[in-house]
Image (cartoon, rainbow, N blue to C red; front, side, top):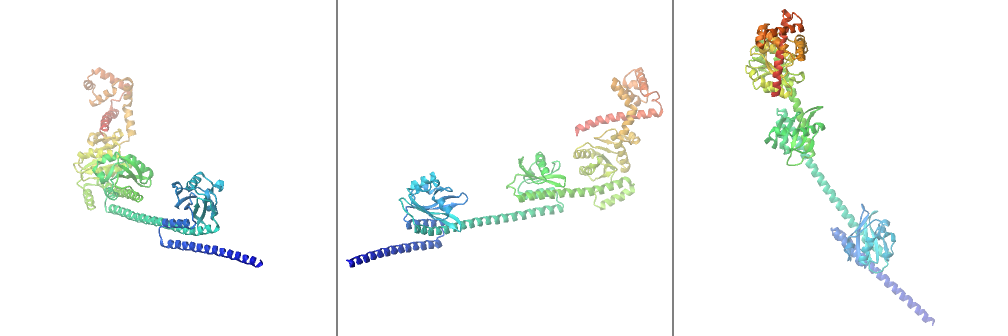
Length: 611
């Protein structure tokens, strides 16, 4: 009996050892299979370049090895902290394949937070606060009961979660989670490699774009430098604003207009060349004002074909602007700098022209002064010297004198020289602008005076003496200017011979002339104004007809007694004795000057209306 019990015990032990051996053999075979799968997966990592295909293969192996009903991989979005399904095996619901898990919800968020694998035997019994309607609906649509998930890590960063789920209750053990972790590590390598490659592609594209931008910038910069160099070279070689406009229009493929500080066209090129300058001038003011305020290129909404303007300025001086029309392409920053450089060149061109004009004006003024203050023999020597210096001179026999404010004389001289249309010498002398030319000058004098008046924007007084000796002619013209200015005349062309008697006597200021006239005839004028009489007209007729009452009465068509009564009234106003000697001379002269003033001022008003 004892032997039987011992035999039975030995048999039980042998059976137990055999079962243990069978389990160990099964575990080893399973482990061998798992290692084979891992080695196969590792081989694919090295052989397959398509990251999506690799992830799909990894999920398929997890699905096979874990005997799951549904396996899937969710990728982690670090910006939104959400997980979205990347690839699935065994899924039957479209909603599940588009599922996004918000932070703090579902088993996936728990795995991300703890960075270790986790499993739930029944998902419905999972922590209540981690349930959300969208996830529960997706789980129900797949019929999931149990699931396990492990994190895909790169250093301490979570890349995603690998899941295996079953549609019946199942307990996932430590070995299951370990195997899934090994496969998740492979998936991590794939995701990390894909991200690295994606980052490299983005960096490559950014580098390529940066290099292209740099190359384009260098090309544009070189083109801008070439344009600037061409502009400077053209100006140094004597080119003017037409060169600036043509160069810009060619390089920027658009019409270009250059205007002065008053909006007048200086040059235009491009398609603008087919339009009338006056049409463009009407479009200038708003663009010109904007460029003046900023001092740089100003982009404008298309205003009558003008899209931008750059002011030509130096310090606080504004010389005008460069205006651009609509072109074939938009202006880049480098193009804007090109226009601004062209505006600087334009400002330098104006300053250069001013310097040349000032030097020429000074040289011509000195020659004018020498010619007017020298004798005939000296003049021939002066003219010969001027010819050797390149001045265009003739045998000057005519003079035109213009009365202009001091600050405008240089500009007036340039305008007069441009309007002369024949060899002429123009300069300043003793506070007046003087034009010297040949015997044709008197016929062109009014044209010159009007041109100067229009350029300055104000009325101008001009005087011409008879053709002949220019020195004597200038002195006669100067005295006539002083006389007419004293009489308040500002806008007309006068001849010295019309005012010779008065100009020879008077060389005074306007205030002194007014005092003289008022002292002689002012009382008579006021008397007529207050009482409606004609004493001043009677006085003028009396002086004109040699102080004869009879001739005065006949000229005015009155009885001689009427004239005598008016003379007695004048005696009371001027006191007896005004008709005798030196006093009569002064009064008669004042009467004639007052009448001349009245006539020329009436003519001047007509002149002004015709300007």
